[in-house]
Length: 341
Image 1 (tube, helix red, strand yellow):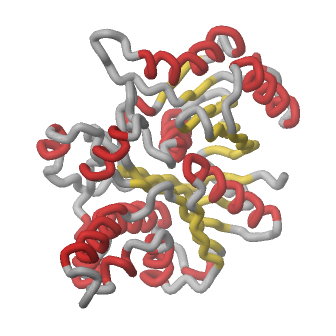
Image 2 (cartoon, rainbow, N blue to C red):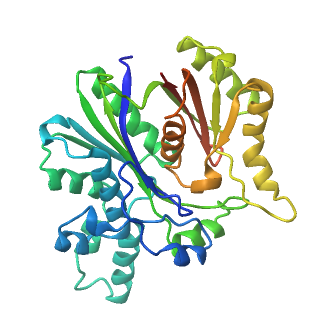
């Protein structure tokens, strides 16, 4: 497949580690976040990024988070240089969805305000970015549960293979108190710390002067698999990209390090596959994790890519980075990144 180069990155994520290339001013949401039962994203001052006050006021929290992150990642290119905007989300705009459903109940299905419904659609973020910069290009949103970001990334790689020069790819998900309670009741958060965030990447066909990294490969698969089956898939994936396990300098996994006094059984099951891969398949690699920083959410793998690229910026030797993540042990993904000198 045609090489795909990462030119710019941006992220809005939890724990006060908000980082972007131009580092906008962070607001005072840390005290509020500390009282949440999940990892809440530390948001920037949106006035500096989304300058239209009327537009900004109409946006929900996740829309502001996604649009701001996307605009920061783009920088200020001429609109014709962006040949596609591809976004991904697992659960979409939850606050507006909840608002619309509550109005539906409170008003007994009569005299409903359509704005929350319109703003709750999954493609709102990509559409808003296109409208702000008047980008009349390919615009697609993927909602594929735990593989939403990987689907968007694959689409971008295929567009570049077909001849596109620059594609903006992003992923975002938010967590609300209602969603947190529902997921808890469904047993989806046992031994898992939930989170949220938004990440964007500007991908290009040409390396240019200073690419941050290169995406070498991507593979997804679904279903319950044993460690042996996953190990075999990883070995075949690396071989298709001309590598062996010993060629991987960094292994990035989706360990979720929620602490529990008794040692939660579900936490052990969730992390056991990562630990077995570290021990048996990549014992010599540097082992990194990311969900202990961003929490668990459907598009958390986008944070893994952001972290891998951000951490490798100062590498002085060529580095092969493999990201393996699974979402609730059902949606699995492999992303291979190479940092050249």
